[in-house]
Image (cartoon, rainbow, N blue to C red; front, side, top):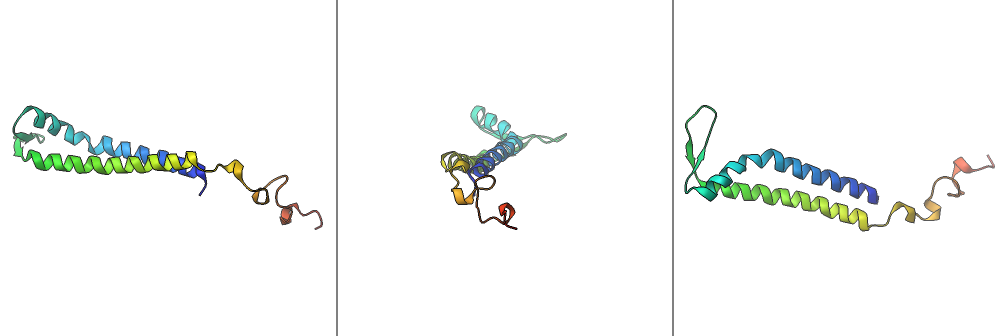
Amino acid sequence: MSDIRFIMIGVVVITVGFVILGVFGTQYTEITVQTDEFSTCYEYSDGQMAVEIDCQQIMQDKILLFVGIISIISAGIFALVKGVRGTWDQDVKPEEMLGPGGDPKDPKTDNES
């Protein structure tokens, strides 16, 4: 695979990781504040009374989400590093080049036909 493809894949995967973090991570902001400040946690629904919930279970869900997001972002960083450290397109062998000075066996550049 070309190195520029690894860079593009890395950028897309990192962006997807941050989008997932933004969409699904906001529900844990309120729980984090409640866990730090109070001994009990409550879930507030629209127009309903507050319901007491298990803080430890919600914190475990939060940690699992963030571990998943960290793994997605680290896979994107790995792809970026692989793309940057790899051999670039200018390292193409002369017999694999297209265009002027390319493969003389190419029928498109054959002057005899």
